[in-house]
Image (cartoon, rainbow, N blue to C red; front, top):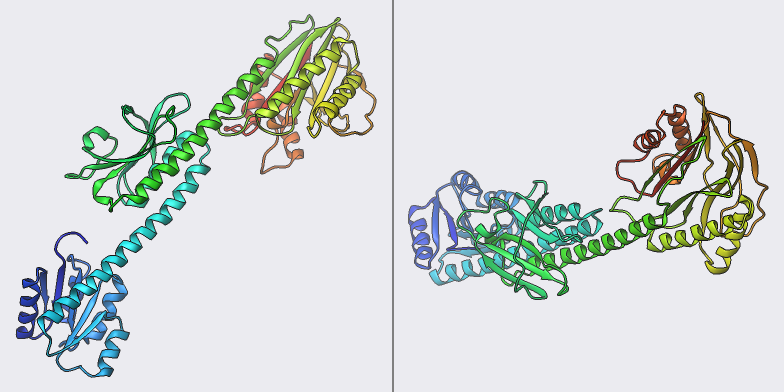
Length: 511
């Protein structure tokens, strides 16, 4: 409670009211007066009142009823009953039962009234502090969950700023540095408002590791409209010397002694930021590894058109192990596409090993089925527990003759003149010891297009695989003259805006 407590004295006796007001005023309270219960109820909730001294017998309403109505609307507003007539045990019991915090029967000694008022106010001040702390700790827990669940850095800052505004019921800002070294601020105008992210720059010199709190002028943090006449309290959390600090900024008037919730909030958000930075770093390494291991160029082959689209998972999801291969070997086109189980940097490294093994066995002159058999043996020997799907095709460009083998991969499709057909070759995925069927052999007709893809193109959480395959067939029934544009259209029409899994698409058209 800030400043001098304000007491509302409610009594229809002018003499008695005068005495009560005099005693309370001399004791340092600010005093307001009311003669009736109706007047008292009209002032509560409008005027700033910290305590009500209420006569039991009023001309319009019972003091007991007035107390009940005050407590119903304002449970944290203390009420002291005073009475010259209702003084027996039954009256006192009824008064306390119906919500009063104390009951004084006349004759009342001034010291007794003042001591009772201070005692009741101390209790409610402690209660208010405890309730405020409990409410803020609940908000801290909710905000901690929200920032750790944020899918990316911008959403994390938005959640942190929104959470801080809700916790402290004020404007708030949260400033942090991304993995790339960009300094951003999540800002929120107040409780109920939506957070947003803006660029911001902070001088981090002299900020030590650990948590620090300082009070500054709001001009240095002109991110939102801060309350006039107030400073801002800035909590800085620096988890490592080689990392930029994180800052949480709120109005100073919102803070209590030692700022415990503000400090805990800064440390919780800093921990979430560190986790997001680490994830972004791993994601960047994995994407770089993937791209470095994929073919650097598409071969130019007389009689064939080739196009590829490869999109790694969005930055907010873990990278996977999708890959493709396009290379001419001894007059034949080797086309392969595959997907290693899992989403992590480890999956990307397994993908690299499988791609190198597949190329090596293909260079030795083996047919698709034998290539997959040998890769499977290598996996089960050197990479036990890993699983992968691969589809391998060898083609004579001049004749269109194809030899194909699959290891649990999604079936490629052939599109010609608006008709679409899936090439089914059921076989166990790699890493599983099981018999494998013979290779498929067929001729790709002139003018036909084959499409190979990974599951990121068609799999959705709200749809089955069959529905995804149907959607792909409908989309691939029309093949653009430009095969690159065709592959891009497949991604635009089938892949989600925020790609949750790697997507690889390879299109092959025979003239």
